[in-house]
Length: 503
Ligand SMILES: [Fe+2]
Ligand SMILES: [Fe+2]
Image (cartoon, rainbow, N blue to C red; front, side, top):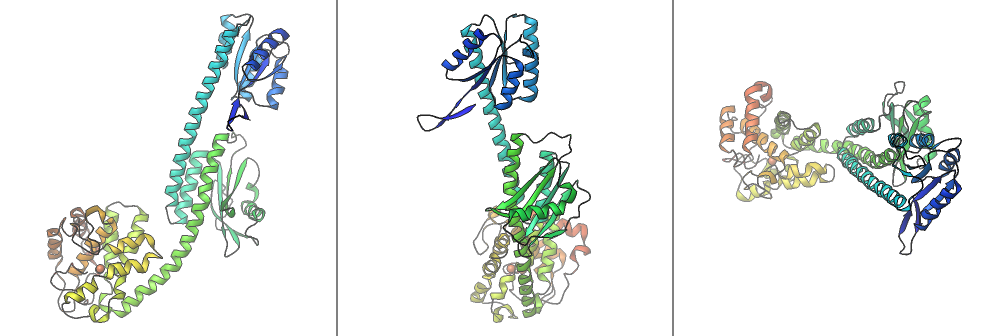
């Protein structure tokens, strides 16, 4: 269809028709009628000329005579179906025999008209054909849209993974499933090092992942593409699509898909989907790269911080590691994803990092805390969350809520049940168990049996009941392997009486 500006400022589409008829009179009648109906109409006198015309411009409907010199209607129809599948054909036949009509329909004609032409018939057939085309277009648009939405959702899900390696693997799997390339290569720009690295390849055996090529001028698309071509060497030819991945028009990497010579090229719809998918890919990979860099730097800072806490309070050494071990085993038994377990691991390791803000006189006090001291001690989840929020945002809430109670009577926010992050609920069980079973400066740790009984008595009060079960099952199954490390040097007294208040 042809798009033209209309009076109301919106664009309207005019259907484009091609009349193929060797009888000048019939041709003229047809064209005149089509033009009266405000359609765009061109005319040619035989099949060969029709193909030339179709080659020049797209048409919505070809109205063609069956019996013509050079290339007849059926021959033309075959060519149209093969070369211009988006174009519909309506046959005009002087013979009107059922056999010829059936043959035309079998070859994919939309319908046929008989001579002498009945203008009402012509109108009905052309209108129906246009309506069907419109329905098909709408359905196609809807399908494309829903597929795009699905792809966007998918790329959003992938983008939420923080680890670049996982992201890349999943992006490439999706590309391979959706577009069936023989090979995929992905390179990522490192702006600090001024180099492009081949991050991943699939199906291009000779390529070495991790290879780098210098890119002196970072903003230069040409240099980035050239560096990529160098990375992929002889694969940078033939049936392929090379896509520069950009973030705010700044190149961040290159994605290349190659197909075998015999494979059909991407359709317009697939090319559109590919564009959508790769546009989010650039942003996701850049975020992932920045996150990894930041995480690496920040983890070094946090590790230093954790070491500082250890140095300050030798008695607590080992508690965070032990809590982490129990929590991670619980999460694995709960069949959580690796990413989830990783987040939990950081949360557990750092759950008491806020104790760095608790004065020595309270933290190291060898007796029962006063109410006032206890209140200060209760600040440690809030302080801890604040310490990590800039660097490990997704761990912040895990730390803040590790002392909430399942029944809503914990602190600092008195969250209840599933309002408490699941990671915090897991840590709460592991934290209590370790605090109860490890030795303290003034007394031996409880027996495992006693600690288990206390955990069970607090089911769905302090701790989520089925999470208590998870830990108890693990203790029963794994025994000493799980508990190894629990008997470490005695810890300082953080609280007395209700051991689980401040662990
Ligand atoms: Fe704590
Ligand atoms: Fe703790």
